[in-house]
Length: 447
View 1: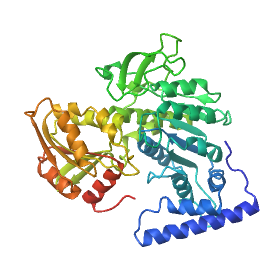
View 2 (view 1 turned 60 degrees about the vertical axis):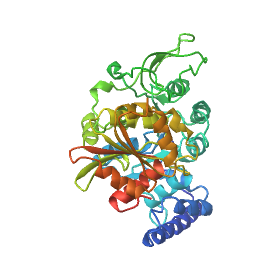
View 3 (view 1 turned 90 degrees about the vertical axis):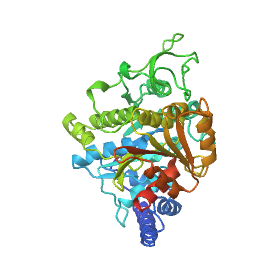
View 4 (view 1 turned 45 degrees about the vertical axis):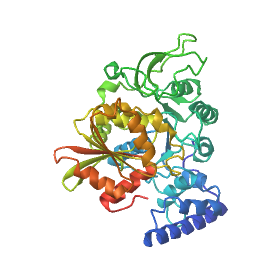
């Protein structure tokens, strides 16, 4: 990790010019209300100064915390931001969710002055799992949080094993002062942590009472990452995350640094317990006292679209981002554990969502259909989702009111009409759909 390294004069001049140009673009885009300017400024700055990520990251006083994984990056990052900001630290964070190189550069530029001077204590950066190997060298993170690896946008990434191998190869080249915090319950990441020369702390669950009744359909890595033999699971919490051992080579789950039963969570869903534990483990490693960590967790406000609660026309609306099989199964679990009977599913197939929507056939929609109630479907691929729900019915006489509405604004209005005042409307959208849903509900765009 390189923190506070002096920058050469020529680099300082190029950096200042790149940052000032990027800030001019940010001002123009936001003034004209063309968007949040979360990517374009970084793109322009990187063309002027290709080393801008390195030059800015060197100025972060206490180091960079890099957060990578398929699900949970935004919630975990905001939890950690909340904890550290309550302690008085200044934080740079790519809060818009732009997690490729240009988005990371933009987040750091936003916190720099026109000369390229960056005065923050920490930078908390959510990073797309596919570019982790590309940004580790310029960022030189102090802490790397590895949340999970699930199948997500197979048209872009491929299978999780290939991503894990790339991560392991590059992380192993970082200084031994780097701290890596992987998910102990994910066999791939547990094994990754056991292979690294750096200091490794694990987070995970120790709660057998929360085991699923059976391994779900949307499961990715149930084979030993060391020898390839099928793992023996004592139980699973979600997808392939659980308590496991390999009967062939002896590989087993790593020991978490925190006892999960001792930590409460403020957000719904077991998946958010993982996010809570990840943030708490990182905060403890940074020297934050436990009382402050718990205070930050208890005062946390959900990120937009991630178990976010809104009140619209006097009715409660909960938005649960659902962008891949594992995440959608977990949001369905939240819905089915409630007594609410109205759910809106919005499926898009744009670039942020992944253009391949075949993943919906790996989702356990049967559980959602079996509970009955009203299901409204919308989005670019509304008929794909409607067909999936129809195939989830045991018979056409199932107690379900399925409404197909391609117009999103009308779909939201219909869903609200079917939601009693004493119940919650659950909305399960993909990523781009979530932004559209919030624009309709709140009258403003996020990006």
